[in-house]
Length: 111
Image 1 (cartoon, rainbow, N blue to C red):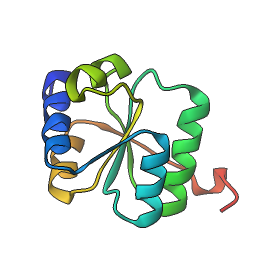
Image 2: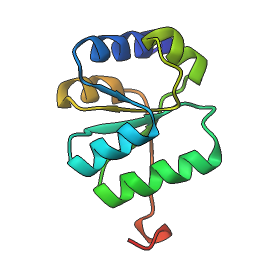
Image 3: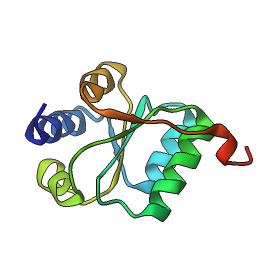
Image 4: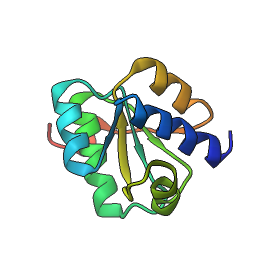
């Protein structure tokens, strides 16, 4: 699937109120158990990626690399961010198609 399709799907999620954007809001969604899948931009910093991996491991949420940059996300959903979560199972299932899941080693963190 092309990045245009992903950003279009993310835009639909946002309009439906099923998209959470930004590190703090994504962490809150994971903690609350509402995040169905977490997505990161290709150009997210290593430090931020580690923080997202930690939260996904802690709350058992799958994490995926979106295959687009933060600028692509900004163009698609109107906000520049490197971390997104989808709170709807159907939207999450559609969005993860063709994406690489980031395998998180739970032993990497002291949880």
